[in-house]
Image (cartoon, rainbow, N blue to C red; front, top):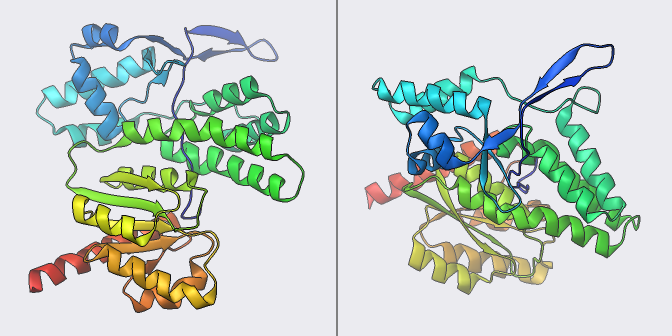
Length: 334
């Protein structure tokens, strides 16, 4: 996955039942049925703590109704009880969550694409967009959101789906209306999920924005979700953010790092001037630029101490942590 990406909220279903397999065997399907207050009483864990465990550690990741109410399955309840027992035994919540997540096998619907459930979900989302079927599109997104952790869903299912939809639009195979429908259905969920993913009172902040002429910003929410997983509080400014707006935000919010995206680089006569303006706006914050247009700006970005995002997400994290370490050393030296 590139520097840009997408994510979405979880929506849910209603009970637990047996379904027949071809050939007469059966498989059990785990779906969701308990509201948060019922789970709180069942497990002896306050609703506030359940929300905090979900927000900070992803334990568990309950489904959601169309109105965004949490719906917990029997498996979710078992996970909560295990987490509760670890914490009551004196283990730190973060360590307890790690142990629970390591021992819990992911639950996913039967794959429909050569054994890859994520690819199958992505294909069904694209197909619903091509059919211009808003109800079907919502349903397929909801199904995809039961596949696993949010970041994995967006990197392996939702992100590829939107990239494919964008390609089809550029090729003239779908209309602007079809592309906008997909963007709205998926994009509207990103704000909600990013809000849920914020790591509580984290001391680190990332400011995310698009270059001054960039209109498409769904990818900012995707990378924002990644930063949340790395322990950052993600603040998204959105499209067409000029250097002056970045400067004001940096002054007010004091982020540790600023992440900018650019799909189409500005023309050569103004490229260096614009990059210099963003570098000045970031002040002493580390800054990184990603997107399809970032490579063309590499000489200007690196000349001002910025970073061009790598293609691999693991490398991006290494770049970020290295930049923050250098920033701390500069502060200590001064």
